[in-house]
Image 1 (cartoon, rainbow, N blue to C red):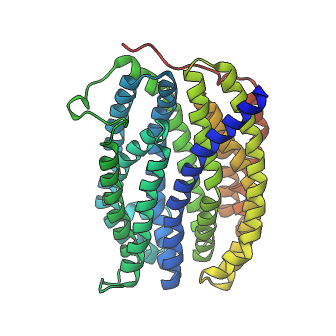
Image 2: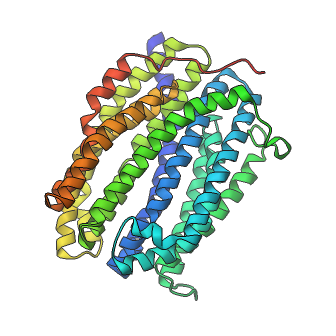
Image 3: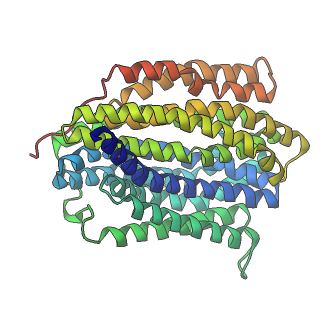
Length: 452
């Protein structure tokens, strides 16, 4: 009976944390989906250029994930311990690093947008459209880092649902403004790609305002402006020990995924267009594993921070089993929606053929993506085992998948679908390695320290 009650508590807590985060992930992915769908109704090149330009924010988000991820790993454990003072210090650390990052990406988008676009395509029209998008969207990149710190802190302090509603409100407004500015509705000018950028920027401003308003309530951890630049040497070192491997992994993964986009983008506009649509569908369907992965990190971290290593181990084992179920379910879902997706967007016949093939390949990729996201980014990271992700990406993505894709595209001139398959090898191929690492249980660690 005790075991059954424990499982009931486990699944109840998992649902309570994972569902809002999965919903939040879904809402965020809907922005990219709506951008692609709406701009796809305007012109293929408009859709493709924005998809390529959005890779800049993708790289920024990868670095932000390292910053907020390190804060979340330590935060989940200190919250499990009940140390609110250290939680506030962590918040200050996150804000300082995220603020500097946001300023850097804003400056790049405003000063050298054309050079950024040339990293992904050599087509002059796509570069021009993408540059105009980045000059406006860059303002949203200035804001995103701050709001993401607030949302990350809410997630690990039992305020998951408010954080999800903030993101949902921002996404809904983004979609509405998309329609208004892309198509020129309600008397607004028809801005096409620039309209998508303006909609994103307005939505991000509102998102930050909501974060500030809600965090002002009782029970929330919020920064103290007078102490924002005060530091704790030991906490900064602990933060760095988690952040640096996460940053290495995020950059390897983020730049790797951007490289995949660039490789496919240089194989022609039809290949780039099909890959843009496939990427949107992938991100939408990954929402469930993203939610469970985040919940895994919080639940395992809470247990370990409270000193209950045995409960943390049991949670980890259950979550890995769940990851396989989510993976196979995602495979079935991708295959089920493929005919609908292919008919939804306006593509050339050749691009439509590429898209069909990419969706089938991606269906099998989803198994590895779900298992690895929940196991690595959830369970292992929850116990502070952040360095394994960097190792696995260096070997599987950069040592195997990217070199094969580069050789296939530019040396052997393989078919687009074969090159795309190369970009999906890393997630499926590293599953045995991930399971071996998990069973060593090096992630069973309490990372907290007594308050200074």
